[in-house]
Every structure is written in C-alpha cells, then in structure tokens.
Length: 582
Image 1: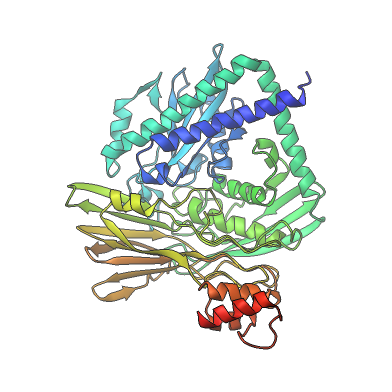
Image 2: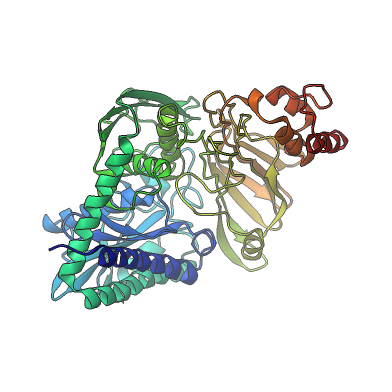
C-alpha cells in the first residue's frame, strides 16, 4: 500500500497534535508549579510491539524521548515474561524505577494501552516530575546519597488505575512514603487525564483514516526519519572525533568525573563510544543506561532539529554500552543527578566532539545545568508542610551565526523556571533578586549567553535546602577559540556569614531560618570563535548595557574603549561614548 504525501503529512501532524494536547492537559490540570508552570513533563505515543517512539509532544522534555521509549519497551517485555500483570482496557501503570528505563525517582511515568477491536494498538505514556518521592531530603535531590533507597520510593510497573479506577491501596502506599502527600492527588489525576485525552484524540484519527492506514503511515514515517538522519550524518566527514567533558564531583568524593567520548563517523552512521569514562561513583551522579542513550539522541536532535521525532531517527546512532562506567548505573547506585545534570554533560561531550566537523551547526557549550534547588519545611502561617523545587535557566553557547541566548532553558528540555510570583504565592519565600548574571557569557566572536542571578529569602519558619547542580568547578567550554562561560555559584547567607558548599554546587540538609538567604548564579554559555575578532561596536553595546565592565571588555575581547583601533563611523562612536559614560 502506498500512502499519498498529503495523507501522510496529515496523519503525522495529527499524531503530533495528540501528543501536544496531552502535554497541555497535563500542565493545565497539574497542581505542582514544577509541572503546571515549569512544564517539567512529556507525553508520547509508543509501539505496541517494541515500545519504539511513534510521536512525542513538541513541548515535552527531549531527555524523555529515549527514556520513555526504553521504559515502555521494558514494560512490554515484563508483561510478556509474566513479571508484570497483563493489562486490561482502562489500566494505567505507574513506574519510576530508574533501572527499568527511567531517569531519577522524581520522574514518575504513567503508561496506558490503547485498545482497538480487543487488541492493543499502541501505548500512551507520560512522565512528570513530582516535587517529592520520599527519601533522605525534601525533593529527592540527596547530594550525598550512596544508595538509591536514600533517594526515595522506587516503584516497579504496577497498575495504579485498574479498568479506569484508582487503586486506593497502592495510592495509600505511595502517600505513606512521600512528603506533602495530600497535594499529590492533583498531579496524579492530571497525569492520568492527559493519557485519557490522548486516547480520545487518537481514536478520532483511527476512526477517520482506519487502523491499517495509520499503521502504514507510522511505518513510513519511521523509515523517512531514519533516511533523513542518515542524510544529515553524511555531512560529517568520515573519521573519528573525540572529546572530554567533566562533572564537578559526585557529591560524596570531591573529585571530577570524566566523560570520555569517541565518535566514529562511517558514511551514514555514527558510533558513540564512552570507553575510558570514570568508573561508577559513590554519589548520585551515576547515569542509568536509558538516560545515557537519550542524552546522545537529544544532542543529535539539537544538531539536526529538522529530523522528525521518531524511533527511526535513532537507528543510525549506535551507542556502545558503557559497561563499567558511571554512565551505565546498576542497582543500587544512586542516580538523582543523572537526568538533570549528567545527561547535559553527555550532550556537551557530543557537541565538543562534533563542533569542528560541523562548525555551522554545532554551538559552544550551553550552561548545562538544571540548577536543582529544593527547599522543604513547615509554613507556620498556613500550618502545612511544603517542598519547593526550583529549576533555573542559563546561557546558551555562541554559534556560527549569532550570540548565545541569555537565561535559556536547559539542554535536556524546554522546561522553564516557574514565575517568581507563583513561587512566592505558594511558598514562604521572597525573591530578593532575579536578574541576568552579567559578565557570565564566555567571550568569543559570538559570545555566550548570560546566566541567571537570583537570591531567595526564607520568610518564616524553618527549612532545609538541598542542591544538585553542576558546572561549579568548570564553566561551559567555549568552541573554536571562544572562552568558557562562568561556572555555577551557590552562596548561603545565614547568621551574618556567607557559606559556599564544599562541593560548590552540591549540598544537602542545609538548615535555614527566617531571614536566611540563598543566592545562585547559573552558568553562562561558552563563547564561539576568536573573541579578538568580535566587532568592537558589539563589545561597546554590551558594555553600555552593563553586560560586561570596561575592564572585562579589555581583558576578554582586547577592546579598550577610546583607543584608536575603533572603527571610525558615527554609530560606533555613539556606542563608544555611551559605554564610556556608563
């Protein structure tokens, strides 16, 4: 059967729309700001045969592209092997076990089969970041955990909804092991509602075009995605490309971890080899295999964004399993930092390896940290407990065409920091500062974007703060002669003292009282190209706007305001005069 191009395109757009509506439903119905405002979630459609990705929402986190494909496949295999109970219409499984195709315990996945004429046509799955799943510290980001049990409740695939009804006993077990359990029901029902909306919308497409036609379209779309990715890979000259990226520390042993990558380009395929990377670590910066694979996939999606999101796009990407390294975590290794931090170092390694081969497509390193900051305590005014989870943006790397974006979302997703007003409304905090981190962008022909500089004060009661961030020891590296962006910084201001964590961007159980403050500076992006070749007029404009000081302009770009090496034109002279006054 041959599907005409118009029908194929309409079905492709329809499947995408199904996922987009699931994303919107999830965010609009959720209670937690991290989902409702920050959009730390994703929804997709997966094959009934092997769990392979069919379509994913455009506003979902890219890091979940590979992990939900992996977790759905694992669920299907467990059902076939009798290790998980067989589904019925209306069943929804819940799972957050990192070793079964996940990320960290806070990323909770739901999966639901879609039936047509008594058989499973496909699976719908989504992932949402829950603010807390128990464990040693509020929010789950235990910076010094040495076993996964210390990070929270670990769930194998179990039916949370049975034939459409919430299983009260399983839900009671979950609530008995997490903080602020009374607030979770809103997120649970939102997550389930998103799948139900997806089922309704998908059935409309199937009723209109027929199951067989849609199956043929899905197969054709997968084939075309693979062909398009192979065509892009051919742009890379055959050869071997290497890089090294660093994780600050594992939170327990204060030494950097190495990600060593060798990419081999052979015609229309790429092989990714992480041999030589650091061994499994004691702390929570281990990465499970699903996250490592997904990190490679999302990095290539950044480089070739026009390739459709489909399992076919991953077929030409061969990843050698990094056995014996911290990128292939085995139980009971702690993993809370894998999705939010290690994944971004993996993507950074891919960028660094390929930037010389594809200088017009690959950027300098972005901030590469989600800025995970959790604050948990009891609000005496509202007489209830709370867990506040803050994610933050940072600078994007400069590229061949322009400067990097300031305060952009992290490499792994399009989630954004919740609005300050919402956070202050929900939690007993006041943001004393929320601004661009001036001077943080790495110098270059095209400079890196600027990070975020914020300071939050605890207004009442007592609380504990925990951080799992990265790029505190090393700033995001520049490319092709560009300078590195500024590293992440964390300061705790209490009792008239300023405390910097031993691991710079990782700490836990820091006690805070009313009036204490936490200040965070997120990394700037790396610079792209020789900074001494940057247009002096652009340097002057940055100085005029306060992005760099005059001393930084001289040091980073070799531009001294007022010297004779400035271009002699009216606009430049105007900028130079304004900069010298400002």
